[in-house]
Image (cartoon, rainbow, N blue to C red):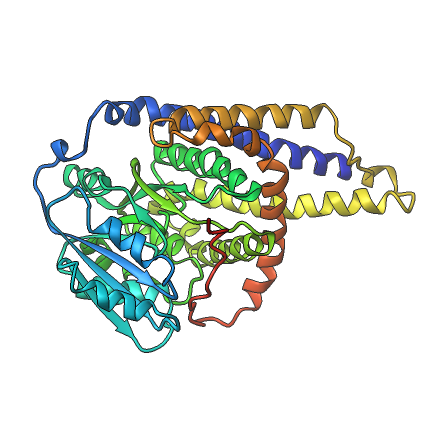
Length: 414
């Protein structure tokens, strides 16, 4: 009985959430996205051209400075500044940024003597910025030329908007792992953000590409320095202070992702730890009626953590049953059945829906479709494993410990 219930939960949860994401994403497209797809650019929809401060925290980014800031020098928007924060880099990042000052008049460079972490870099730049709107990207992110106006229109048409997250696209696709992640970012990240926006609350504004209203950040307390995923934390800060967080699929940013299993594990473990940190920090909202719209996001996250431990229990029971004769109530089967066929078919439908929705922004997306169908086997297992490992690590982690930079796996460079 217990084994059967465990198996059903492990099977039904991802199946249910897949259809929730598909339905929510299609509803988002019909209500919001299809109207903007017909527009040629975002400039014509703006009510004015306010100053935008583009903030780029950098730690050991010497390999990416030229392409990242080369793209920022040619944005299709007339009124912006660029602030680069060299956060104690130990490579040639500082030298390269200073050299850019001669050819890039919009650029200002801030140097921090030691590694203080991304949140400190963002806080420092936000205090030095001249613009009311802060466009924040990572030091390896190549921002699309028309991203700023697509973001800005949300702020101009609604004073309640505190942040807008863009649409990150993976640009390193030279290995199987990289190609699989292309499908993940469309069928998981893209669909989730669309469906959550349909509901009205987002779990996170992606740290690799997001614009903030500085007044909203000031009201909610800027970025936290002790959370491993500062983007999740600031998203919850804004929304618990009753600011709106939105998604803009036309604001593209091309990013690098790990292409080794060790790099992928380290990245997802950090994401899992940061997510758990943030959710535990905001547990107080379950006692506050005014925060009720955040409850479903909180419930879904805790259910995903429970699912991860249920998956671990299912695997352990299945392996244990191969060696000892378990009581009937504990017996489970790990052999593929009709449930696996249904789940795989749903994954293909989910990926197909995401590919149709994102076809306007990524012409090469279909090339990775065959490889991306393997994402459930890989990423569901990685997500479950990292969550199981992350929870005890977070509970044992010293409170207030600053989250500093650790250079990640940026994939295979061609």
